Amino acid sequence: MTRSLTSLALAAALALAGTAQAQDAAADQRAVARAQALQQAVAPGKQIFISRQLALTPEEAATFWPLYDAHQSALADLLERRAELLRERAEKMAANDFDDGDRADLAEDLLALDTDEAELIEATFGRLNRAGMPVEKAARYAQLENDLRALRHLGLEGATDYVSQ
Image 1 (cartoon, rainbow, N blue to C red):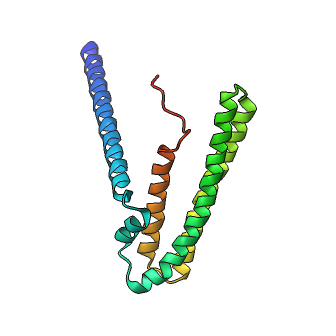
Image 2 (image 1 turned 90 degrees about the horizontal axis):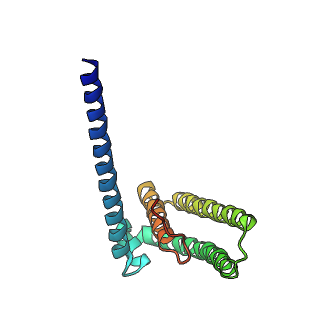
Image 3 (image 1 turned 180 degrees about the vertical axis):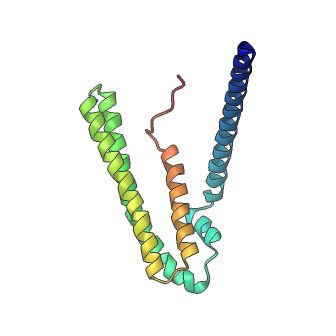
């Protein structure tokens, strides 16, 4: 009796593990499909994409676009800082001069940039709210910027590739 319960428990655990792996694979496929769909939607241009997603009224557009432009300008500065850090890493690695101290510094700098970018999105959301933009559209814009941020980070030149273990 104990042996059959143990066998049953083991079979159930294996079945659940297989189900969990299948669910993880399906979730991965959905994430890849979503990223590809986002990439295709943005292909004609970010402003066109944002405009379509937010469906702004003329009054909302008059409020939104100057704040969008300010956000994009600040974002461009952050992206340039990130690109410079990755260029420096590539140069040091090519010269075989990239040690643990450099790795720690790079990690800290990249984390600080992530924080700065998140704070920029938060600040822009606040500015949009204070300017009278409907909350659902301000929140949607913040969500879109976060999604585009993730897409950008996955496609960065110099980004580390994943290695199977």
